[in-house]
Image (cartoon, rainbow, N blue to C red; front, side, top):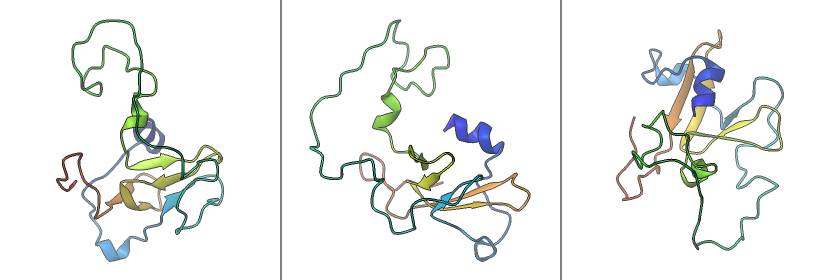
Length: 134
């Protein structure tokens, strides 16, 4: 997510324009047309029928100050831990610049490309079932 903040420069959560004036899309690419349409269910390189469950074991050197790695800027996170969290946008691995909404249902970029608008998916929930809100 930090990459997106640097990449787009500025994320504006409270849209100053009305919601109707903003044209949201399922994805965003600044370089090329998106490979996947709005109704795609999974990326071509993923297996939707892969077995689920099991244990994920990751290792990292150092000491533990905080289990919330996002808050601890001193300690590098364990490589791959980001794969255990859903994000607002998911980058496609088979496109140069394709971003698709995961927790974000809609994505829009202002004409001057300085403001990124995101609309949360209404079914987005925390691990305990509480709705995710802005």
